[in-house]
Image 1: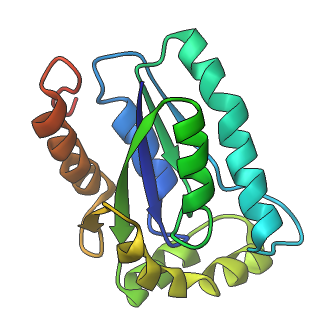
Image 2: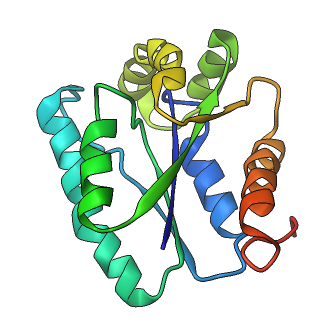
Length: 175
């Protein structure tokens, strides 16, 4: 089973890109968003433990279902959730590749401003834009600057890298 982690700051398009990418694989695939929607939001160690526990519980279910690829989206950054995820993947005998989506501050603000969910939700996401600077710190990260890309173009950028690595039997052209 191939694990593809899509990480980046809130608002960069991780979840939507993950869903689009799953549709491109030519093998049984699934997407999961590991960013919990919890209140009050507090990005600390117990939250990262919650994220990793969710992934630990879910991946075997996807494997039993027959998934050959699981795309996990979320804020999985070094010195935050990354180390916990790596431990989960190691324990489950799975290797992961990481794609880091980045965007300039204006692009992030515009995307977050268009999010549904109310003012409190938007303010919380805007306050986390600084996490974009941490994306390059993830070991082995494959960076994609989405600042001026549409969702389709960003998905194409990741899909082309997957195609080059895995071949056409794993991932096909855009529909």
